Length: 514
Image (cartoon, rainbow, N blue to C red):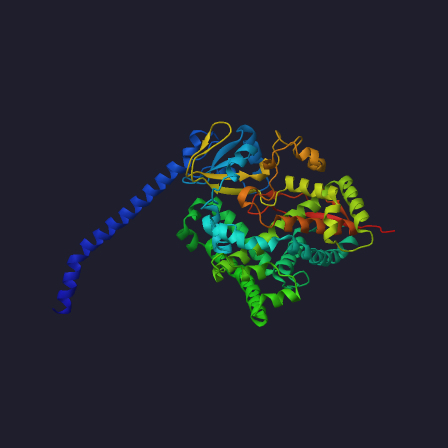
């Protein structure tokens, strides 16, 4: 057969191939539409029993959010209209039941329901399938293996390091004390908490607080949090392929590479040290074991350790959670104390009585500052570092009012609204540390105050975080008066971690020690 005859055969068969491809594409489109229709039917089934705000047929409730400080106001307004819970649609196919009643929260968090498979799927390329994201037996095994990293004896050794990193930050603030101008403190606190997690959990001296310029890792974390929020609120980005091909997806992958490069370097250096030492006991004899030592040496009942992928995921998870959430908490605590000088004064007097002439905190000092601790908890109530968490309901859950959360539904728990529930907290927007007196705590359900979540999936590092907050707040108040800048109030926005759109600004003045 010559070339012309071959082309003739091909031309005669081409229309049939063309039709076959068209039919295949049509089948794929019809199949995908059916999957989406079934998903919508499952997701929106929850609206049958839970009324909520009106929504657009295509965009859901997304158009009602302006992505500024009014977003939380809108959620609080809807919560007043719809007691206990209301559905909130993110596009035509995804719907979350937003809950904020303590009994609803207790029902969900006391169960073993897994993390939501959409929101946390968006985070997974960044922090891997670590404790924050994983579910089932993998989560249970790894949680058990990592718990020794937060033992009393381990945490005790960190207090001196926390004091050192806080002192480095406060020394840098000296230049602001000589002026009457305000400064943005979140960046400073974020560098300090990154420095702290590196020294405490990874025995790594990063010098990030004294380096010039913006820290690449912290910038990457900021970008990743914003990009994940953008993906959540633009429903076409819910599709992996569309997001991957978009400019936003490119920026997301670039930020992930920067964050991973940082953690890979930490792991590489520690493995080199352990290889030289050969035996863990020889490391123990030189210094206290840290979180990364335990991560690398952990073994289950079958003597199986964590894989390289699991180690990477846990380091990425704790690098993010160990610095960013704590930075948000500390920054808003300092801001609250600046806004309430009468409470700041009482905290300073308490801290001064405990520390006397010391410039550092010791382990024994942490439980000697009860009023300061109450102020910290009240700040965490008003400004919870993680304002929302999500779960996927795998089996029907019956709530106290007789309504049922159907299997397959998605639930978002608004910790921000839970902490401002007027049925629980009298004058919920007022700063009142006495809410956390023991006699007042005993009158409330434990599920009314959840800065570190609750139930089997509560925050494994909550004691580490509280210790760091106490150390930083105490040492700050010993050296500086914190003064509110009424011209620059924070514009609080919902993100993975609580943020302010315009930063957090305060003024400071040196404490007169005479």
